[in-house]
Amino acid sequence: MGSFQNPLLQLTASAMMFIPLLSACGGGGGDSGSEPSSLSSVSISGKLAQAYVGGATIIADKKESGSLTGNCKLDAGEIGTTSSASGDFSLSVSYGNYVICTTGGSYKNSDGKSVAAAPMMTPAPDTNSSGWNVTPLTTLVATQPSLKTKLDELGGWNADIASSSGVPGKLLRVAKTVETYWQVSTRLTSDSKKQLLALENLAQTLKDNDVPTDEIGLKNLTSSALQTSMKDSSINTDAKNISEDSMKEILKTAINKVTEAVPDSNNKIVEKDVQDQFDDAKEELDSNAEETLSKKPKLKEIAPIGTTENSNPYYTFSSTYGGTISYFGDCKSSTTSANKGENTIQFNSLSAGTYSNCSLKVTSPEGEVSDALNISSFTIKTKVTDTSAPDLTLITKVEELSTTSSPIFIFKSSEAGKIKVSGDCQSLHQNAVKGENSMFSFSNLAVGTYSNCKITVTDASGNESEALNVPSFQVVKTATLDSGIGFNPVISKISCTIYSTQQIQVVATVKDDGPIGDLKYIWAFDKIVSDMEIEGQCGRFKAIQSIYDTCKNNLDKGYYIENDSINPIQLGIRPEKGNANSISGTLTLIVEDLGGGTTKMEQTST
Image (cartoon, rainbow, N blue to C red; front, side):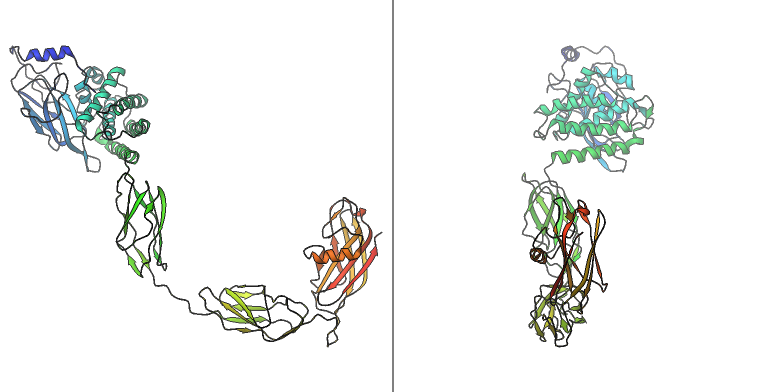
């Protein structure tokens, strides 16, 4: 973008080269608003105040044709010097039509670290001047002289903003906002001259809209100037593919921190007293800009390995960009692609030992290579092989005369594992638990004697226990054993009582010489009204045999297994729906001995 041009000023400056000097006045500070009027030497001294900038090159930069500024380079025939550590400089200039331009240099932040300074300008004084400062504010005036008036109202366009005596808060706010704008412009271009052109855009925007000191006004005008600079291809060479909104948001966030540090008032603020807050704003700006602009992946360790027996350990890290993984040190992996976000890789087989030299990098599709991510030191331990087999102990043997085809056998194992049954026995149980296995039983055993059954347990490492011999037992199914013990239950009495509309009680007196727990009671009514539903009633049938067969084949409902020695047994039936008084017909009670016969008794319901 071209610089602001004032034809009258150019004419005056050119004419002065040919008008004999009539008088010259010495003095410090101030500006008459004109260029030096003679070729006699003019002495200039002052401060580079951003904070105080040392090591900067200061040039009495001859203006380019048709411009208010020069090229900000020390050309042949131009005077230059270097600022001291405290920002002091002095020049003796014997030519006219120039501006003072500074490049390079650095200042100390609140932690004492050197920070690169902005390029700056100031108009040239027309007389000897001993307090001629160069600041972000004078940079605006160099291209838009009319801004002097407004800046003077705020505290002085040429004020030393880093002075230990302080400057008005409003003035410091504007100065630091200009500096913040420049920091964002460095993301558009690394060329100092182009950065100064971006500052010219800001000066033009402020000239056209006044110089605000409130937060919203500063954000809006700097954002407008930034948008102009981003659209200017002669300035924006490095961020062409970045959205303007993203860059403006970065700028606004930083200005918000600047305005938080400096109140919008005329009270004097010493820059050094709030330098740490300015530093925080700059660091956040740099971080946000780096994340927005850079395609260089940033890596972070998520899950260190630590100590493990796994010779192929897993490792988790995150990356801000996807790309290709490169491995360094003793750790390698067949995984070569990283995704944006978390990545879990598995290293190739590693020998036992400690690994402390492993690292990795990620290269983005644009060719940007991350810094190395040093993998936290980890140790692969020698895996201890388990060679001990489970130890089995008998707890409860099978009854010598078993009345069930699935008798219970309780044993204890020192380890969990897989059960193997050998001999004539078999079981549906496959897994043993560590400790007592009280739920184990044999399955589907026929009537007969079992004397060769054995059990083994194999642990997770493949170690098989010694066989546990199962003591001999018999499975019986006949009604009468050789010992003469009967297994046919006898029902001597049943009764049905309806206590309320919600409860029915069936009482049965049963005689059985078999063991406790081997009787199954099944009950049913052959006539039930359509809206009657009874918990435990397994069907609405008129043929008693059908009731029995259906209930028998549905062992999960409609029956009660004897579980104690109470006799007579009481069976409570509670309707789920309807009225118990609606029951009529015949109550049938069937008692089945699981090891022997079956009997039934009927009673007509009243």
